[in-house]
Amino acid sequence: MAKERFEHETRVLRYLEKSGCTFVPRVLEADPETMTLVTTHCGQIVQHISEDKLRQLFCELEQFGVRHEDAYARNVTYRASDGRFCLIDFEFATILEFPDLGPPPPEPDPV
Image 1 (cartoon, rainbow, N blue to C red):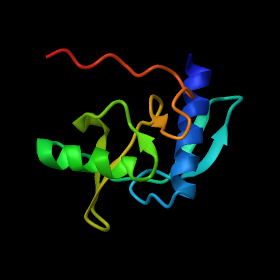
Image 2: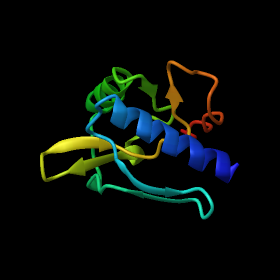
Image 3: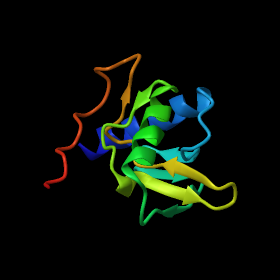
């Protein structure tokens, strides 16, 4: 399902850009033939983030019409240029306006 996930992530990122979401990567180039996606840099993966901040960040994303569906710290970066936590990896996200669009979400991490 690599092609479908690539197309879906590209679609979600473009949707978020049109929605005015500034804490996700912007698509600079997308080549469906090679499945190459070039985006803006959103900082470094965070090593520590509180559960409360994590929950707030993913809730904030939903205000832009997207549910991440893989809401774990591994998908959070910190952009030092403006001191902003950002989100990455949207291959399983749901555009809330179109809930049936895209691949199924991943299984949760084992505890």
